[in-house]
Image (tube, rainbow over all chains, first blue to last red; front, side, top):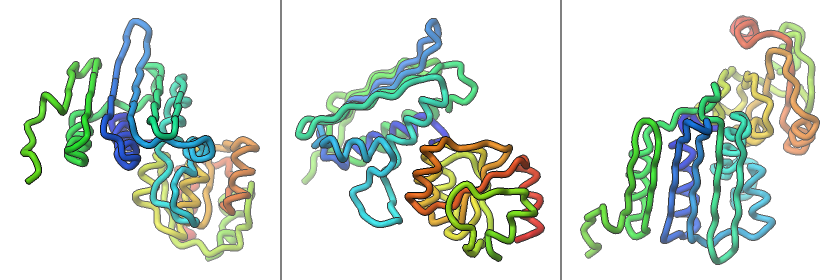
Length: 159
Length: 107
């Protein structure tokens, strides 16, 4: 698992971009009344078939072969974090349509990582794929904001 | 030094794999992304985590083995995955601090 939940979100967002997504939606919410933290990342990338999806969930997700794999633990790490914090993890993927990943945790759980620097994660994703539409809705104790790269970013158009 | 030669000092038993491997150094962390970033191949990784992701990270980093502290025991499914991935798992009743002290003298 990662030190901050924002790093889990960065991990998922980079997965989405690697899957060729042109639209990524991120939702983060903290509900104090229900003592719940929830995050969701949805993309329109190429998605995964059943076999690849099961591999990704078990931490053998990389399409690279061999013992030394650089990637492929993102979903497994998030599942571990959710399960360690009395939460749950859900993911679904449809080839040709996209992938959605959702995790929730007990907000007050002593092992729950802090949200961390979500703005830095959003910035990194926006810069990693200027052509993709990135939408973020965050409702947390530290900050509440909505971001849409289509209306909130003024990137110079590629020459 | 062989991993097998550290077992008695660490009061450790082998849960999976063969400890007849060379051990070069040690890394101690319970944060898996930190281990991915900083552990060196051939090191002994000391942690109290027993999640199956420990096996994935250990295989990826090619560590000599994983020493699980505080008497924690991984689930049978995790042990089976370790056997499949040829990851050496050890368990010790020592705390991480105590194990670190012994390893500091040994390595």
